[in-house]
Amino acid sequence: MLRPVLLALTVAILGATAAAVATAADPVYPKYPKYKVPPAQPQKPILDGVWAKQLQTQWTQQVNVANQVVDRSAEIAALRRQTQEEKAAMMNTVPGALTAPVSLSVRAPYIDSNTHMEVASRNGVLEVLPLLDQVQMRVVAEPIDARPTIYINFRADPTRRYHVECSVAGFDQPQNISASDGRTTYSVNTSSRATLVFVVEPRQPGDSAVKIGIYGEKFWVFRGCDITSAPA
Image (cartoon, rainbow, N blue to C red; front, side, top):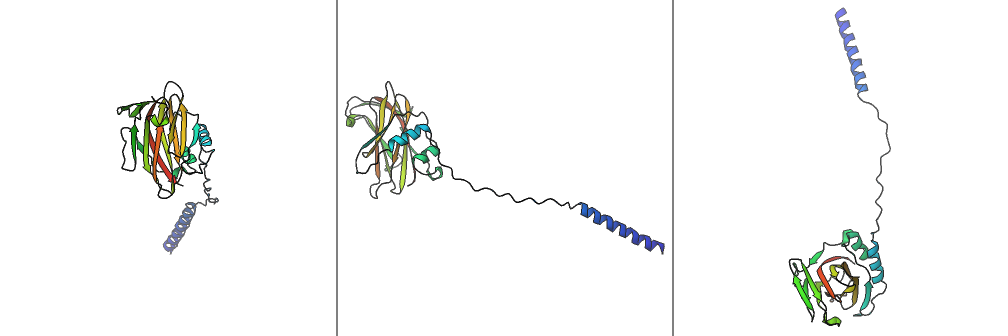
């Protein structure tokens, strides 16, 4: 009789011990409120002071008459290319809407029959230097239509705005290096390296061919252009 009693007592003790261990293995943690990620705030594109000045100068007048040439000279010389944020600010959009740039230069003057670069001496002195990927030009005659000119050609979608950014340089004395499509003229005044920016506004359907002529006043250098677009 004693053995069954001891066996029952042992089982009861072991059961109570196991229950205590199980209880100790399941600690109770305090409940904290679930963290909620705050919604992202839209960031306004940041425009560097150099580009802000150019933007303010170039957009003070609006072109209301077809083929009217408006001189929007900006007395700046930027030694660097624009960031995506700066491009977006000039095009009234956000960086994510910009396409990858299409580049035209001496080493890569041709993309297709619509997008290509032309070099015209037009009674001036012109030297093409493929090893340096640049064109050197010197103006001999005074009239604008006699100055050496670089032409940038591309086809524009009427629902998009285009940003053309060109690397140029002037020497000796300050001079205006200008870009014009026959409607609007953008200029940068420099005696050294500079970035010349041209913004092409949306055009009417059927008016898609864009031809931008780039020319200087004295001795200057052209080093290539990047073409970027975004929905208008």
